[in-house]
Amino acid sequence: MKKLIVFIMLVPILISGGCKVLGVLAVPTRSERKVPAEYALGREKGRKILVFVKQPVWVGAQANLRYHLTRAMNRGLTDKVKIANENLIGYEELADFRAGRGDFSQLSPVEVGKALGADVVLLVVVEDYHLSMTPEERYYRGGLSTKSVIFDTASGKKVWPQVKSSKSVRVGFEVEQRGQEIAIKRLMGSSAYCTVRYFYNCVVDKFKIGDDRTHIGWGE
Image (cartoon, rainbow, N blue to C red; front, side, top):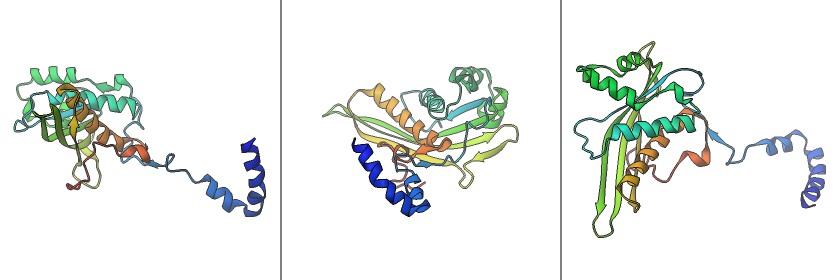
């Protein structure tokens, strides 16, 4: 009944205001507005994608960051960008290739991608990682910094980002009380989300998450 009353009240306004009022009503709300994708990774169906995580030897970590971050990135590409699982080259296949090539460290991301049949390589370089426990509270605090680039293997050229040499993402938290394993998964998941969000039209209210530290004190 209330909706009917509101509609009846709006009719004269719509008639007198014409297109201007209709235009205002047609403007999307904040919950509907989206941040346009910087690179629509899912626009070309059927293309094979390789997530290639590099962890420099000087970045110390007890956990296998390559494994955890690759899985988190692939999950994000599936859930958010709607990339089919069969179009993602799994971590295990990349690990087998790495183990079988004595010259693996000398290969470029494009060369690795071509060898594995990828059309696109999402290179993610771990720049900094820390995870520590506060003895008095048994809580964990952590941080992860990465830089990402997308290469097209056919041309061998970088296709994203277009303006900068790479896209920097920093995530972190001061308190995680569910244990080390959960803390690691949280860092990987947050980093993956903050990277994958550039590959689809992300709703404005969901673009920024609590663990995102990218634009706090560091810039891009």
